[in-house]
Image (cartoon, rainbow, N blue to C red; front, side, top):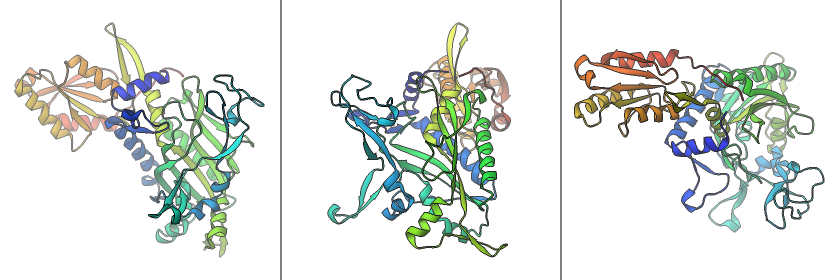
Length: 445
């Protein structure tokens, strides 16, 4: 597995991820996604949405507002409990999460200076709604997308005529004023979440909790992550969130020094959220069970993962180096559904207008069907290496012979095998390959 510096370098060099506000020195915990990064993120979100919404009859989606009435965060408990312990170094001025320091530690782990006493810090970003700050409503940027689902539970259940069990899914931005960021995009202050709140009858929650753990585990494996780099770790009693009766993390083996860390969490929130919003709003959010003719407060199973952390994991797991004819070849073996570019069309000779014209025509034919690009900015060998490094599944090469026999060469990213096919069949051949392709994996964490 590559170290984090290798992935950071590749991400910037190839247009996946850039430091936010870089020309002004950046801003810690904020990142910008470049042309390939935004395609990767969109593909991750599309694969998740397809699996948890489009392929199921029991889950629908919403897109709730980022800013909410501040009473939402009071009722949910975030205003009081969404806090972390903070300690400052009096010498180097660095800040640390006190719960990550050794028990009883009073000196800075960086410079040895004296640490301040621990104080509690609310990690939600404050903001104001209204034109004049003095008269404006004070609220927060949402630290999670879940509450937008809970406050819309009744709206969705009624309009979509859903019966328990059913779920509501959402993908959206969240914001946390983390004390410590780092490890590239592993921990950000602005990030994107993929969450499902799955509402069930009390008593059936344990069964659904287990089923969602299995479903989410299989989703990561289905997109090519190696099983030896994943594990399921139950939370201890001292680390569960205030709303959870049970929780597990699907963890990934990141490069050292990070090691095993959370990729996705699945929690049994019981009836905490709907009950608290019922009490806080005065609106009854219980569910009327037609079979028993009783009102019940649904329990909730929550699978929650981050798009950014998923992007990092897929880059890490797909990165592969090998020797080809005495030279290092870097290839991103991204799953076919995640690869930012599916096909690159390359003219063998960019100084031959007739070759270039054919290549551009093929790229234009492919674009309505696949995310394809045209590139003639280097020699064919360098073009292949560039496409390998960004995970492009196939390269189509147009050469002088193509002008006579009306055929082109299709090169496979993983095997580097090449086949010759008629130009007229290129679209159908590539669509069939990408639909049926199985990408192999190797190596250990």
